[in-house]
Image 1: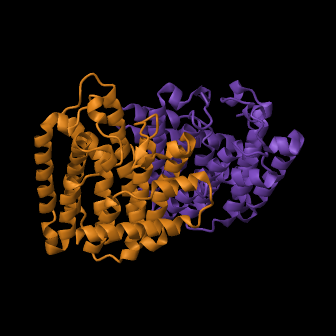
Image 2: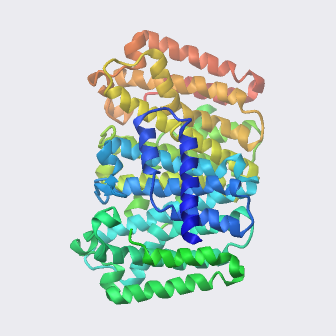
Image 3: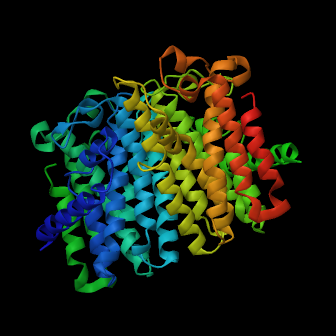
Length: 288
Length: 288
């Protein structure tokens, strides 16, 4: 059920991007935008579509916000992979944008994908103006210097710090870097339906942390071909991770506890939230 | 009158940024955001505040959109100055962000300033949700791959082209790269007042083109100390500019014609638009 929906939603999102970019000029920056939004797990887009279903929102209204969060996520990956940040040559098993094109193009691709995210949540077909303004404001806060960029900045600062990060510090870093967009994606359904965002927020906060712990576990246990990007980098760089702080078993146990907590937060939705619960379990069992 | 208002509005905008960033953590990325939004002509912010006055909009409502366009403009400068783009070490007479900090910080500063722009136009104090959603949608379109980023992409493509750009091509490039944000800034007052944007759009389209021609003239006639950034770069690179295509006299004449056209577009506003007319004349007489 969940697996089928994740695949179906991924195909819907891909078709949405294809239709969208058909109206764009054929320039390297647009080719890079298509490339960067192609593939991936589509977990954030799925969360938008699934929480919209849970709130009885017309799927047509949820599609653009689903594309929006995938667009913002893609922008963050393109910029994160650049030489002045993580300097990664591989993403989803393919050359990163600055490798396939050049750094200038990668910079513009990321910039344009960020703008696209805000365009997509404010298009008239998303619904009432109140909802669109709310989606844009919350997305700006989730992605900016008090959200995702804050997490990235803390990550950079940690690299030049004298002592490795503590568990509370690394948790705060993750809440920005990965957590903020996951929380936005999960809350989007409630925002679209003008309902209470609190249960989905609690769910997504636990889910986001479990997701990052699983990432750290994969960095130790995975191989690059399966994960689709370089692994073992954090350990090699001597960076504090959830695994270095909790041990491999401890990290896996902590992730499982967080998944339980995420599922508990959905009790108000009854049986309707089964897909979201399976998504949470998927997050810690995935191989990429 | 215009000069006094430009200075007063610049001070209002600076005070707005100071108050805003007071609530942010003290990290290099935030220091860079403050730095990049400090100083400059504030022409775009002035256009927001002035066109809002023209439409009888409460200045308190116009302040955040004025900060927003200055934030988006600042992001574009920070990224444009990076080594993978124009590789400029000097901006407004001071070291550029990647020189003063590093490239990773400059990347994040630009990314965060873009998000901030969208946050500022959608804050509740800007007014009705319809206005906020409209401001965000138009800003996203003006700054993205069909607006400013398109212009930057055309600029990059021109560098590796076999033949220099023609006048229509360089005009299209400019309409994206500089024009789109100037048009957004000038239209903002009409959007805030839910009035007709057409006269301000016509004004700003002519103004934006005049502005870019004046920039090309300054690149030839100005000196770096006065202009506050490197000059003579376009000619040295053999790039087509309005000056290379029209000659110095021809370019100055064309800019003056555009200023006349910009002023004519404001006739519907009568005497109330005197400040905007003076702003247009200022744009082609400025020394930086």
